Image 1 (cartoon, one colour):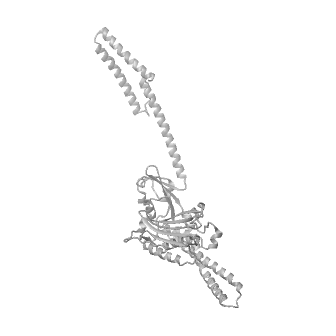
Image 2: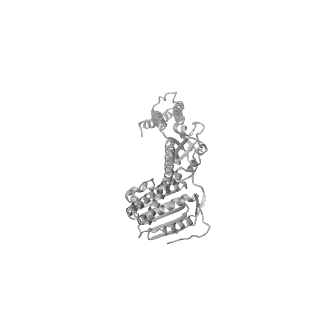
Image 3: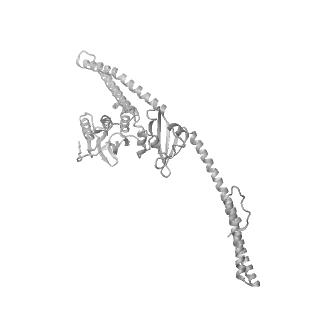
Length: 442
């Protein structure tokens, strides 16, 4: 117990004693006790009024000069007020620093509530998205930014990869937007101007496509002459056999260059498509059955090749692009699996969507190479890749074809123990079957 409370109790007991003693001397002790307690209560009410008046107008009135318990209460209130004012000034300073730092950021920042309403945005976001401080607060962001790709991105659950939109629709800007959840249902939208990068990427794609297209014709001519020269050497007994090996090697190299050019053209076509693939119904089971027959007809193939169809679900998309993705994965497995190895191909669907996997018992891939496998021209072992042929663009084509269909590629591999490549398609791209399940095994 504090000294002020001890003094207050002692003083109250002293007043009661005086009242009782006065009543015993002059009579009517109850009246004396009531008068003393009433005076004491009036004093407390006066102090309470002075304290309340000061609390209401503490910015204009000085604290009351009282002692005892009331003085201690006033002192505590003053300390609390000073502490509150200190923390308030500190928070204001931090908030101003935050506003200055976000205003200096090269990227736009938009804070969203749980229902996608705009709570705050910085100057860069206001400039890039044409947002107004007073008019656009507490408005749903998809009501202001009506780009279909962004609206679809908001509705989807996976926001780990940013989406690039053209803003305004058909306008000159290309904006990269990524949603980052934080706090209790709140989200940040990071906005970045990628117009320059997108323009350079488009120029690169155009250059690759044009150069590849221009190289195709002379390569066709060279390949034709080499074919004729090879036939002549084979049929003419007087021809110099020393040229047979070099001509065959030149034919192999022209075929490899033709394959690279064809893959470059296909990749450029996929990269230049700004919208998602169409929604034509693709018979996946029939397509995989044909790919199985092609593999079985190869002279160099693994000893075992199985195709498991756990679903007859169809895909909505571009049949040529899906065929390209599936055939590239199967061709890679055939290329890097020894003759005594095994390849298992599977197609199935579930509540999450459609899935296609190719599992082999080939040479496998070290873990450090897996994140870069889908880069164009990336090779784990350049020497071995050159010996076995290939353009180095197959997995890049697979990745872009899947992105066009809203899908993703999952790679699992252990060096020396084989690999598994799995294509995951979203549920909206899968058409449920109307009949039973078929399984083909070879």
